[in-house]
Length: 273
DNA sequence: CCAGTATCCTGCAGGC
DNA sequence: TGCCTGCAGGATACTG
Image (cartoon, rainbow, N blue to C red; front, top):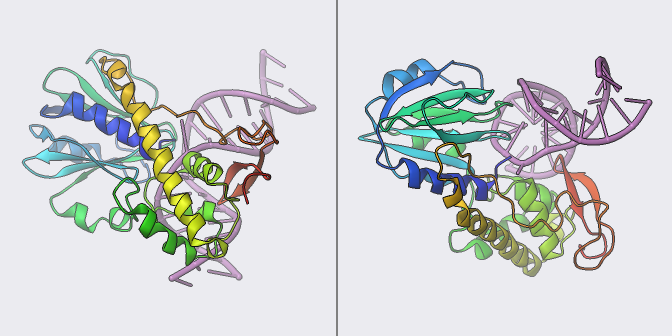
């Protein structure tokens, strides 16, 4: 479910709500997730540690712990982090509850269990295989210079390449579809058969759509500061994603949908070449 | 190395 | 109403 903008919105909310708080306790049940949820380990290690300002890398969330260690989180398709009062009713599929020193709780809910929450011992972040394989951070400077040659070197559909976290980190199906529509590029077009100029435009649109979504999520953060609130699930006005069969907002023709990169991809046959 | 597919899991919408 | 199928914002193991 969450892509870079949603994860960044969660990060900002956690920064506002959790920074400086101390962990009082841990509850949950160890289960299989994308990485095993090890509640006993978390309960042994976390109490007494302070939560620092969270960081984001691609779709991963890192919460540094003071004096050492960190929590590594990925929300997968269906993951949510919520901050609640201690007595709040438990949502189904709440796998982990982290009790805070002010009586509130940080809860990790994930029905499909494609996400994970893991304790990183000191030094583990630097050698984590998933983190170290991540590609360009798209909101950092230089995307328009760095990404095009990487795409040009590959024959796969540009859509598939945008979803490849080893190339650019944080783009998921929604924002890949939106960026391609904005750039006027056919999703199935091979990277190698797309001009550097058009790939540069694509990189610009990737950055733009992500930045706009972050901005929109950010504007609503304050509404989500209430203890019972969920946060991080906002989407900008979507021009293409999910709009197959509906008129293209640029030319009026009908959008169609194909499966590209294993996922449904809406696009405009007239505007996207 | 690269490209494409299968797979993990639950919930829900839509068809019959 | 109830059952069945397919699909969902992700990442990775595996195949050719």
